[in-house]
Length: 522
Ligand code: CA
Image (cartoon, rainbow, N blue to C red; front, side):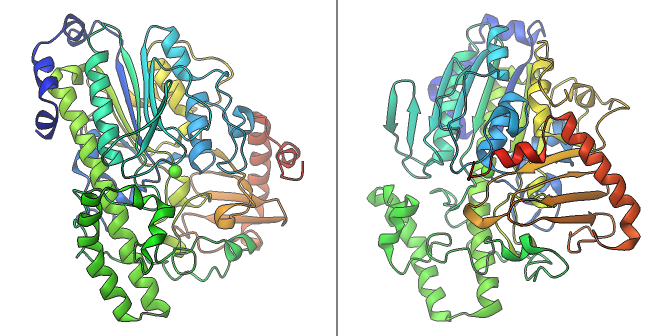
C-alpha cells in the first residue's frame, strides 16, 4: 500500500479502468513486457534461489515473480560486465559484433544499429527506458527515456532526458520506481501494448543503502562463504594476479563507509546528501566507525569484519530493490494489467559475495557467469517452476520479440525462450555456451579470456599477455578450485572441448585474431 500513499493520483487512475486496459484484460492485445534489471545482483542474494542468505536477507517480492512463473537456474552471460551486458540484451549480438566490449576505454554504444526496442516500437509497442543505461550514447528506440549518467549516484542523483540533465532529490531506487510507475500509468491509457525497461543502479558498488534501509542489517551476522580465504593454488596466473579481493582491494573508507576522513565521501557521491540525509546517515555510521577503529583489527579478523560490513550494505541496497519490485507488481495487480503483462527480473550479471575471497564480476567462474533470471507470464508460465536449461542474456531480445509476435531478425545470435516459457524445451536447445571478456588492463585486472561451458565442464583461455588454458570439472569441483587442464585423466575431454570451442567461435563469428584486433595497442 506504499504506492497509494505516494501516488494518491494514481490510485484514482487505477480505479477508472480505461478502454485500453479493458481490452487488455480480455486478452485482445499483445502482452506488455516489463523488464526489471538491477546491477550486480548476485543470485546468491535472492531468496528464491535458496542458499545461506535466504532467511537472513529475503527478497519476498522478487520471489513472487518466481512463484507466479519460472526461476531460471542456468542463465549465463556472454561477457560479465555492465555496459557490454546491456548492449548484448539490446542487440542480441555478442560484444565483438555489437561493438561494445568494455566499460572502460570504450567508444559510445552505436545507437543507430538494430535493437529489439526499435523493432518493438516499429511493431506498435510503446517503449520506455528508465534508470541505469551505462552505454554512453543517448538511448534510441524508446518513446520515453530518462537515464542516469554513467554509473549514476545513489543520493539526489542526476537524470538525463532528451532535454538535458537535471538533479532530483531522493534515493535512486525509489526515484526510478516512481518514474516507472508514472510512465506505466500514462502508457496504459493509449491502447497500445508497452515494453518498459526499468534498470536499477543498485546494488552496484559502493553499495550505499537508502534512508529506509540504513539500519536493516546493522546487527546481522552473515555466514562466511567457504572460499573466503582462497589462496588460488591449483590455478593459473590470472587468478593469482587479479585485484578484486575483499582483503586487499576493498577500501575500508569508500567501500565500507568507515570514514576516518569524511572529505573522502565526495568521491563516492555521498556529499550529494542534504543535511537531513547526512544527519540520518551519520547517526547510523558514526557508531560503527567508532567501534571499528577501536577494534584495531588485522589479518583474517579484518577480512572477516570487511566481509560482514560489505554484506550488510550490499543486502540493504537489495532490500530497496525488492520493495520496488513489490510496488510494480502491486500496481499491475491493482490496475488489472497483471493479466497481460510479462514481468522479468534479472541482473546485468552475477557477482561475488566473498567466493574466492572476491567481490565484483568479470570471470567465467560461476558466480559472475550466471545471472539471476525470473520470468512470469500469466496464463503461460507454470507457477513455481524451476528451469535448468542453459539460457543466456543473449536470448532475451529474441524472447521479447516473439512474445510480441514480431519476426526475429536472422542476424540475432541468441534464441527465443518462448518454448521454454511454455514448458517445452526444444530438443535441440543449446548444450554449450560461449563467453568472451575483454576489459584488461583495467579495473580489478582480470585478464582477457574466452571460453566455453557445457553442463559439466568449462574450458577457458587467457590469451593476452599470458597464454594459459584452464579446465574445470564443475561436477567434481563445484567451487572451481582446481584447474585440471594438464591432468592426463582429462586429456580426451580437453581435446573434445577444444574442438567444440573452435566450432562455437566460428558459429558466432569470433576468433582470436579478431580479439587481438581489439587490443589496446591496435
Ligand atoms: Ca553490473
